[in-house]
Image 1 (cartoon, rainbow, N blue to C red):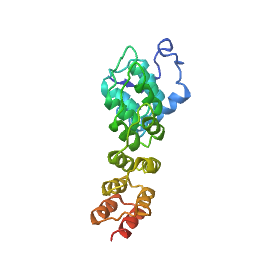
Image 2: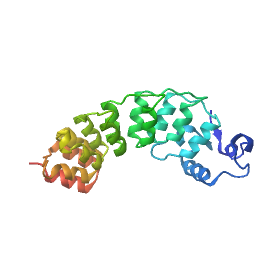
Image 3: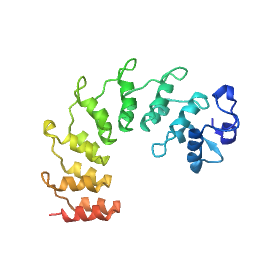
Image 4: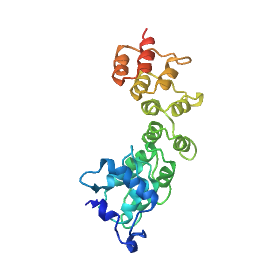
Length: 240
């Protein structure tokens, strides 16, 4: 079910603790933000969970009004866009959504460490694994990475984690994983992932000492498809 923008602005004050004549400023800003991609003057919950254009206050507002039915994908959407307040609403009555490892991965990738902590703590007590660490690396969630690499979890990063950081274009995550204590070395898949990310700084780091990686024609084709001149130049110059 969806609610029209007209009706959203006139929900009874007794129901939502809002002035009936206008929305609170922060909510009004988010409504105006999502109006650019509304269809037929309607507003859906998924619009508020768009990772590229999140509207966190609006998402919580809609959930508190119980305007739409929710499912596991709603919880994962909240986790992926880093909306830990919406996650709290979904995990509590009347929704009582049950998180799983997919939710934990999305929270780590979504870049919100508070959401990760929530899922690791009672009563959920989810146990992180290498998949979770990959999500944090791909999302550039440095705080979550530090949490997962330290006691009591002590996860060990591997090449899969490294590829995640590279694919996300997260140079700080990459540098953390390449620290001597983890004994990881970038491979061609790491370089390929970095090229896909279109992060020229990250690619330059892998091509320079101490890694001094070389590229090939396949890498160059991917760089050309990305359309970034600096990336094309870097990859082309590194072909033996």
